[in-house]
Amino acid sequence: MNILVLCTGNSARSILLESILSHRSNGRIRAWSAGSKPAGKVHPQSLTLLAEHGFPTDGLKSQSWDDFATDDAPKMDAVITVCGSAAAEECPYWPGAPVRAHWGVEDPAAATPDDWKNAFEAAYAQLDARAQSLFALPFETFSQSELHAALNKIGADHA
Image (cartoon, rainbow, N blue to C red):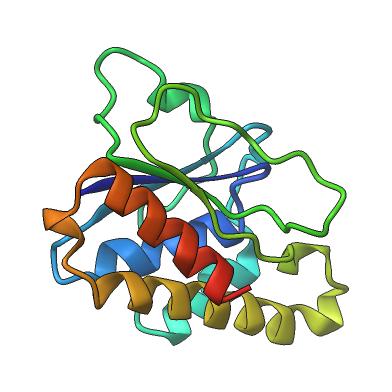
């Protein structure tokens, strides 16, 4: 399954979930991430946290969602937005995706540098819990409506 994770800046939350989905799904998911207004670089605390959790960080980049709107881009089975549901931030919309879901997480990059470690760990924990819930399901056998319902339930259950 191909999943695109979207957020505004594509430097923290979306990068974390991209890594979790790609590297902890035992080959069941291939994930990418992008943003509507990419920061241009991955947040340094994202890279630190991912390395601490044993994820590779080579090749991670902050990129525009336009990179995935081309004819030669991978076909996405699902698009998950991770913008904070309570935050006053623009949450990107991906047109034409077969399945869309929202797994809102507050932006850890908005924390003060002294609080980054805790804020990023909290965001990682939320995203990891949602990913583990997805991994526990036979999502490969789901219809689009079943996948949509499952992704939305995961987002709501771990809010």
